[in-house]
Structures are given as structure tokens and as C-alpha cells.
Amino acid sequence: MTELGCAISGWGAALPPTVVTNTNLEKLFDTSDQWIVERSGIRMRRAATGPFVEATPLAHPPGGLGTTSALAVEAGRRALDSAGATADEVALLVLCTTTPDQAIPATSAAVAHALGTGGGAMDLNAACAGFTYGLVTAASMVSAGIGKVLLIGAETMTSVTNWEDRTNAFLFGDGAGAVVLQPVSGPGSLLGWDLGVDGSLVELLYADHGSGMVMKGKEVFRQAVRATVDSATTALRQAKVSADDITLFVPHQANQRIMHAVASRLGIPVERIASVIEWTGNTSAASIPLALIDAADAGRLAAGDLVLLAGFGAGMTWASAVWRWGA
Ligand SMILES: CC(C)(COP(=O)(O)OP(=O)(O)OC[C@H]1O[C@@H](n2cnc3c(N)ncnc32)[C@H](O)[C@@H]1OP(=O)(O)O)[C@@H](O)C(=O)NCCC(=O)NCCS
Image (cartoon, rainbow, N blue to C red):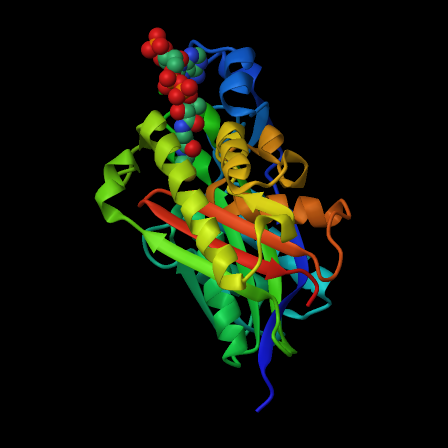
């Protein structure tokens, strides 16, 4: 039997139109642009909901980008177009999100309906590690013969932001990034991976139903660097490659200081980091696809290049993948 691999054949991003700068946040709590930039590298973020959006849209706005599903649909449509694929060719839609539109049903149902995708659809919640969890899951299913998968990371983090908490409200933003995964003959793109979770660390970052996020920032920072370095190292070892072989490092965009600390510990130069955090903030499961897509659109990737994706998030979860571009 011929070996079946998986390749990314198209991608697309979507951001809500409202830009919230650090200076805008000075109206909500005691902070400054300088403090936020120095501590996080974030200058602005996009918001789909919250105090800076004119009117909070209804769950399913006509043509708006005010919900996770709306952002996911827009990114998904662009990814299908760029792959030259039609919606009915999709065998599975995986929506990675920690901010679903509703408790029931899964938001992927609304996204599948709006796009008209074939096959199944499911949500995957591994918080900010979600997209990399989804990539490993979806690539494995493509290799098992399921067909094409539309993999989307989409979030409205502003819907779970406590706008009175200056210690974390500045970190988060909204957006979506999507890729089409399709079968290819041969070994394909997923060369190594690592998935993990430590539920004993739940209290570091959580949001109860109907209330805003609670975060122990300093401890999250420490655990994030440790977990991401360990996880990326495991994935590199499994792929039998070294950090020197990595053309593009796509870390979860949580804090520029975390991204730089992780890259430095792995021995990856800063110039090889894919970064959008300056203008998106932390978009949770959308952050890695948004950074990957930005780098791909900027021509930073050629066929055969090795990409290292590494995310961590609430749970605490972590996930890494070594991916051969254009296989
Ligand atoms: C949140 C984070 C940027 C804070 O940076 P930090 O260097 O740890 O800052 P501290 O929490 O020690 O705060 C330093 C001071 O700034 C103050 N401060 C906090 N938020 C502030 C803000 N928005 N503006 C100005 N000052 C602020 C604090 O009150 C503290 O003052 P104090 O020393 O008088 O008590 C950082 O801890 C972080 O990024 N953690 C990881 C968060 C993350 O990645 N979460 C998502 C995971 S997926």
C-alpha cells in the first residue's frame, strides 16, 4: 500500500475590523502604551466584541465578524479558495476554539452549515495549544485516508475578557486562521509532534461560565517557557532534526518575551520567529495560524523548509509539531 501523507494546500485569515490600541485601553484602566509594549510586545489588537465595538452583534450577524463562527467562516472560505478546493470536497471540519458561540451545539456545526462543507465537523478545545493539537489530529486522519480536512483556529477572546482587570485585559484579541490539509502520496509533512496536558495547573488560567478570565500571569509565564521548550525539544527529537534545521519557528503569540525566551533556549535566532503579536495580541487558538499565514504570505517559506509550531495554553495544555512545508 502506498504511504499517505498530508500537506497544507491553502490558507486564509480573518480579523474583525475594530482596532484597539494600547492608548485606547488607557480609558479603561490605569496603564500606558509604554508599559504594555515593554512587558508584552503588543501595540494593538482586533476586537469583535467589548467596549470598543460599536454594538455587540447578535450571535449570527448578517455579514459581520462579531462571533467566533463568523470569523471562522471567513477564514475557512479564504483557505478553501486559496487551495482551489470546493466546500463539498471537505471530509472533516475541525474548529479549534476555546470561545465557542454557544455552550450547545458545537460552533463547528454553524461553520459547516455556512460554508456548505461535506463530511463531519467538530470543535476541539485545547485553549491556546488548540491549533497545533488540531494539526496533529487532522494530519493523522488525512494520513489514515479520510480525505481533505479544513482546520480552523478561531477565537473571540474579547468575549471572555474582564475589561476591569488591567493585569490581563491588554493581552488578548480576536481573529481566525485556517488551512486546508490534503492527502499526498509519500511521507507528507508531519515529521514529529508532542501533545501534553497537566490539569493540576487549571487554576493558573481559567474562565467560569459567564465570567471573565482569571490569570496568574507570572506563573503562566514561567510554566509556558518550560512547557514549550520541553515540548518543542521532544517534537524535534522525534523528527530527527535539530533547531538549526528549522527555517521558521511559529510559537503561540502570548507575549513577545515568552516567544523570545523560548527561541533563545531552543537555539533559534529571533529572525526565524514568525510574529504577529504586535498587532493581534494573543488570539489563543488563532495565534499560530495567523502567524504562519502572515509568514507564508510574506514569502518566508519555500518548499522543503522545516517549520516548528509550538503552543501552550490554559489547562495547562501544550503541543508542538515539526512540519515540512510544501510536501
Ligand atoms: C501579564 C504579564 C505581561 C505581566 O508582566 P509582569 O512582568 O509579570 O508584571 P507583574 O505582574 O509583575 O506586574 C508588575 C507591576 O505592573 C503592574 N501592572 C499590571 N498590569 C499593568 C498594566 N496593564 N499597566 C500598568 N501596570 C500594570 C502590576 O500591578 C505590578 O505593580 P506592582 O509591582 O506595584 O505590584 C506577564 O506576567 C505575562 O505575560 N504572563 C503570561 C501571560 C500569558 O501568556 N497568558 C496567556 C497564556 S496562553
